Image 1: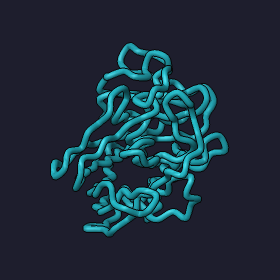
Image 2 (image 1 turned 90 degrees about the vertical axis):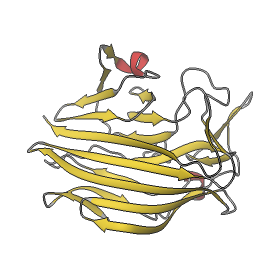
Image 3 (image 1 turned 60 degrees about the vertical axis):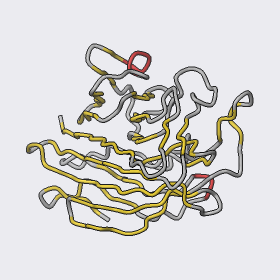
Image 4 (image 1 turned 135 degrees about the horizontal axis):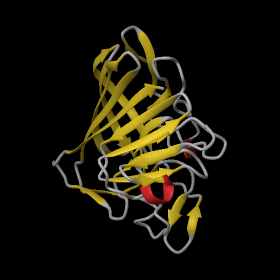
Length: 251
């Protein structure tokens, strides 16, 4: 499916990807482009095959890996486990060029439903050289669900990833900032309202995180982290909502 702004295709949405189970298959946006056509996302990169453009992905959902790849195990480190789940498309309530309203199910490796999700994706024009992508979610559970990260499972060094993750296209020396904070070391883990990502030709302005997970060195990516240093609990029958926005501008 394609998202369009003023007749211009700015993103493609892969609703039901045919992927190896170890990649934790899930819907994702890729490629995402600027209005001038620059590709800003990456998917299935060689260094982390489970990074899929822009997607919702969490490494520990009641013990199910919905991020992909190896699972971080306390006192063991990263380990291959038979614990990969899937996020499945269950139907659209609305499907327009600039707005999608979708029903999804977060499932464990046996296919049992852990969470139900209502997702809304919109694309809007900001001005002649910029557009805004908004991705909002509402997660509900029949039983108590905890969302965790490698950090909550014992990994040090600020590896609090998992949530709304954007794997950026590979560009040498990307610049990341948040207010006066500069670079991965300062921005990773921060609580600033906005994060700016800039490369030659375009920039992205990101909002919608209580904590940010950022990488510029081993790979380029930013995550609105849901469980940066403590687990996120979703109680039965109590919807958990959030909204992530990314404004992409040609420069």
